[in-house]
Image 1 (cartoon, helix red, strand yellow):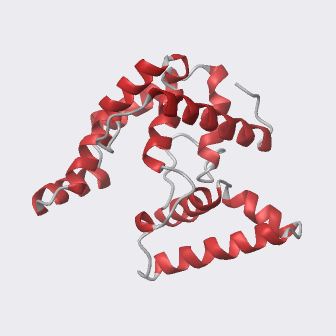
Image 2 (tube, helix red, strand yellow):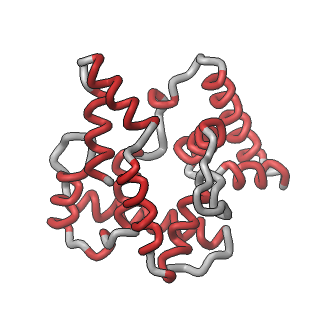
Image 3 (cartoon, one colour):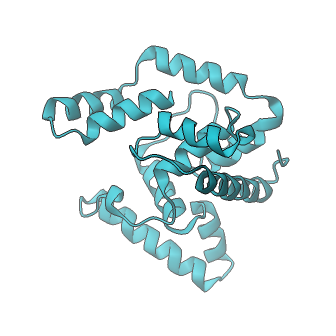
Length: 198
């Protein structure tokens, strides 16, 4: 799946219009065999790792979703903006605002403004500055469910060189630190959702 993601990202970044159109087609309609593979991989997640997976889904407001649930583009964008800007879920920002925390209120107002700018075509979320390097964070987050947490620095760098869409050669030490930060974020979400820590 990560290889498919890299292929789609390469197509979308191409200077060739036909390649970009093909990339968008793959993005809008993933191949059936890829969807089946994703379902098999999901079903293969050990019970002990499911809380980590559910914590990740909470970023997009989908922690309690039933199998086959599709997140709307609006929901995904709003949740993605909150997470990428402040490292908090939209639910955390709303809860902080309701509790009277001024910082959360300001962050929620900023996310809401960005969301509305996106809705009305005034903002490309891909051009926003983010708290995270989203490409690397996504590969790491997905990789944790696939055993990436046990790789040494060299194997971690090799894995990213093969699957990451950035095209750069990766540094194992930096990826080890990213893995530690990602694990810490996921554990914070698990705690916030009262999920068992994995």
